Length: 100
Image 1 (spheres, helix red, strand yellow):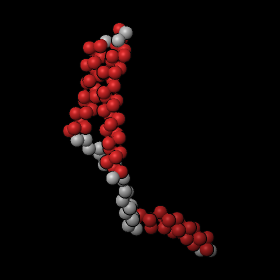
Image 2 (cartoon, one colour; image 1 turned 180 degrees about the horizontal axis):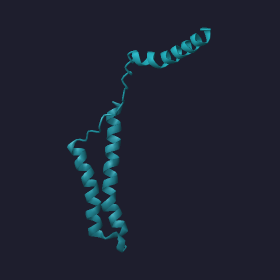
Image 3 (cartoon, one colour; image 1 turned 45 degrees about the horizontal axis):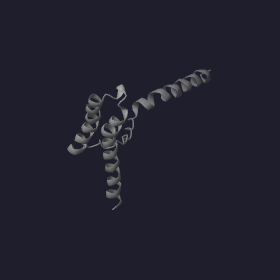
Image 4 (cartoon, helix red, strand yellow; image 1 turned 180 degrees about the vertical axis):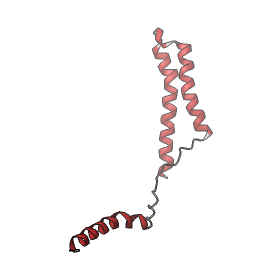
């Protein structure tokens, strides 16, 4: 006579245990996430000056030579040429310095 009620109570007890026991237990703290970041690029004042000059020099030469009015070769040799040669030398010298 009581076997049907006992089975229902056991099922209710199991279901309530499934939902209540995890809430009563202390949750494990999540392991801290390791965030790998690259170090910010540090530019020296000479490198910053070189960047600014490599922008301003071609602009000044463009205003002087006006390459849009058929004066392309003087602008290419005196405006863009020194910037390309300067950064190429910087690149080569940095490679020589790092190889030592």
